[in-house]
Length: 203
Image (cartoon, rainbow, N blue to C red; front, side, top):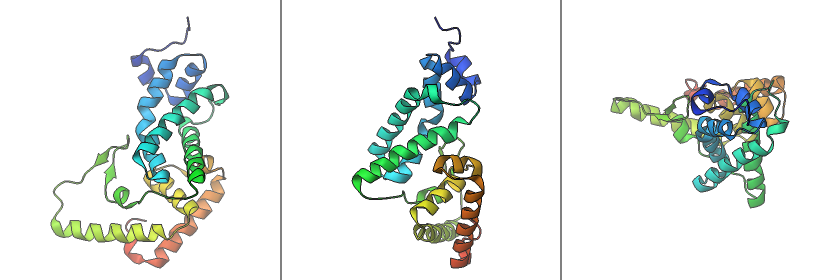
């Protein structure tokens, strides 16, 4: 019997990293809690790449399979979220390579809605029609500008502004350095601003 076995109530109170330590000792309830915390985020993240709902669900499930398989290699001194997103990213990119095509999910829907911390959509309420029209126009301009970026640049923008990740975590996901990510992000935003001042409120 595992001395570190957790029940559902205990699992909710533990950090991601603590759950991974427990999972490493064989307690699958720790994995179940991580799935509950991150399944929506991982699904949306995969969807950015593959643009296919069913495939994104499959990749999200496979991500947690890989988490379980790699549990012994997890370093609890590092953050779990960048680590699991790195797994999901690699699975998604491998899938795209097999299809010999690269697609990124349109950012229009993400730019048009606010989101809760758990990834759920938070629709704006009682916006005036003229404000909605102006907002839609700006969102379309933003989406068009982001579509002009290369895949790597779009990925960094998505991670920073839609996944709300700090540069250090982005660097871990994409296999770069924090300084390089900050420099790249600065150049991307500068280029977008130069292309159109209409999106300044978003940047």
